[in-house]
Figure (cartoon, rainbow, N blue to C red):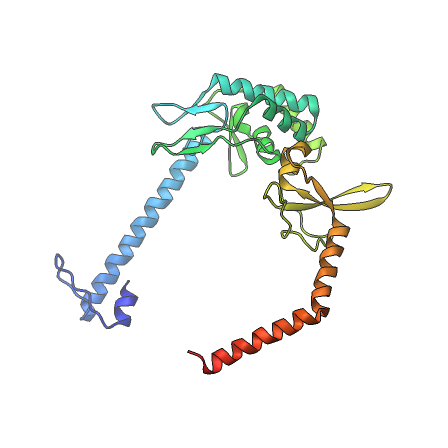
Length: 283
């Protein structure tokens, strides 16, 4: 703010305190007050972070949106088990042990009509309540909060809340997830040269199409798959997937055709010339 005042040759004069920026003493006093104000803000911020860190290490709930299976105690400060939702969480863990794959579990959850946690804020705004996807299901299956723990900066502490999943079931699910090689939905770099990555959209669903591949008999086959179909199962999208080589070849050939089309080239030249004439002498 003071830089803006100086830029326009404006002086700052305090009515309640005897200083103004027209004198060197006034500028010194103002800078001292600003420095102390910044120091106070930083001290408050550090103390808040330290308090939250200590609370997490003690296993306390420090705020945020609760997950499926828990509600926030009306008195605040801790999580309480929502028995109806907790039964769904236990069933989801068991379903994964039965199917050993995420997509079949997502499909079964959809069939049962279950959704992610629906939470209403103090202002009356609704959060969550969306259908499960592979990523959201993976987060549910790997959230240590269900085992009665809390995670703070990579360290696990005993939580004050009650566990929904017992230790044996929790460990069996984690072992199964590791065997299946899940990575939590992290993006993979475009190391296979997908020309249309991030550019294709599924017309029926309106969602993006992601690049993937499969290996068969030592040969790699590449595809662009509807994200909705990938996350929620093949039955959720009529398009499903496209052969990557065929669609990339079709797009490249179309672009080449545009570059050799005389009508397109002449049209572009005419429009460019018209724009130049309007710029040179137009209003």
